[in-house]
Amino acid sequence: MRSKLPVVKRVFDADICRDGGSYYFCFESDDGHWYELFLRTRAFEPNATASHDPPAIYLESSNDGQLIRNLSWTEGKAFVAEFTYDSKRFQELLAIVANEGMAIN
Image (cartoon, rainbow, N blue to C red; front, top):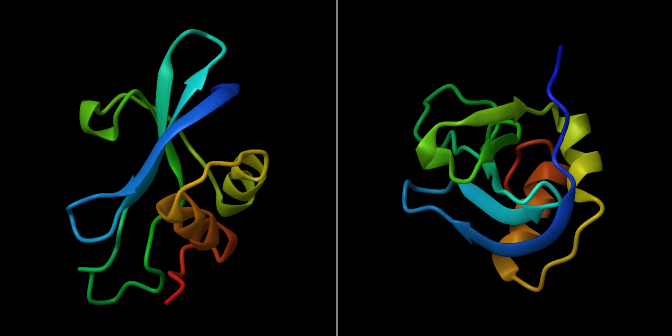
């Protein structure tokens, strides 16, 4: 059984990671925890067909390794469609999700 997606109350951070191009945004949920939606870069994979993996949601940080759920691109598009956040990096992340892992240059 797939785990239930957290309900987003507020997005509070979005950025690009220092690993060479992974993106994330952090949000508070109605369950009292914060989560991270993470797009892992595939920039260093020689045969990669996309710039990023599909979204994954982690409890707190992806660095903590507590994966809640991997999303398909369709699920990812539906999940992020509800949110706004005034950030260039957030807009870039939305574009990558909308284009199913293909970075917009």
